[in-house]
Length: 309
Ligand code: G3P
Ligand code: CA
Image 1 (cartoon, rainbow, N blue to C red):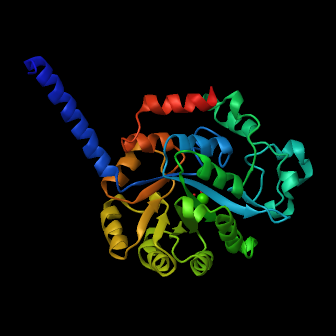
Image 2 (spheres, rainbow, N blue to C red):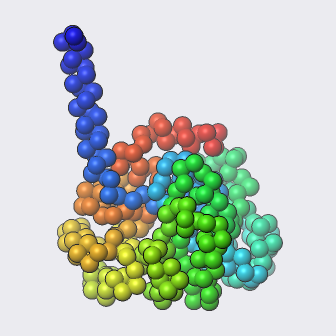
Image 3 (tube, rainbow, N blue to C red):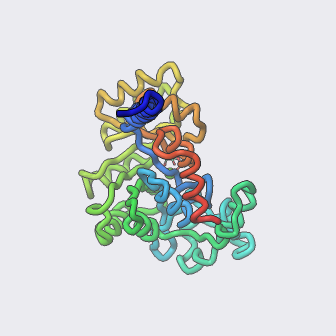
């Protein structure tokens, strides 16, 4: 028999866990996509950024895939290495040269940790120094070997520069058995690229990215997404708050999921979760997991410390 005090405590605990479960339920539909890995705490598209995101049980590791001069698929957002690497020191005459003019061997000499530590002093760490550009196969390896097996959310970046890249991506995922072992989504701003993925592996979901205005988004862009894939990825800033629910309703009625990019503030995260968007790309994997009540701040910080301290 429980004492009245214990009974009250137990009731409070149960109420708290019910509230938490309700919030988790509210978020059960919502996909957390770690944009360039947990890029708020480690250099974008680095091994550390992907490992940290995986440690935190993210749903997907997001990456931008391009191709080197000698045909290696690499993860890098920009078309050059000027912004995020020490290329000015390593290849001073080639700072603004396109990725496709570098061999893998040349790229492997670049470093991204100095840039991160300088740009984000609060999160600088000696463990971040020495971060390197990754091959696609390196990111796939994180997904396959990490115990949490995050999915792979793969963008064909500037595919017009890399004819045939869709087949090369698919071939690598087949060779590594990634399609059988983890969730995969293809994404692109280029609808033609998504059509190529559709021809190669029609069963793998495809999300059409767009940065078009609200007027174009709800008409042409949604129609394009419907034609080439299973979802649309708009810049969240293009959807007026008053139109969010009806846009989601329109997309869902057309069997399209909606993954917004790139959402780094808690207020917008909560709005999207409550409006029943399907997910968001974020540089702040930590904040989105907190918003979803999937992890608390202490657990997040201790997971980060395990890798970085
Ligand atoms: O891929 C989703 C989002 O990342 C689109 O923007 O420019 O960061 O690739 P971007
Ligand atoms: Ca991207």
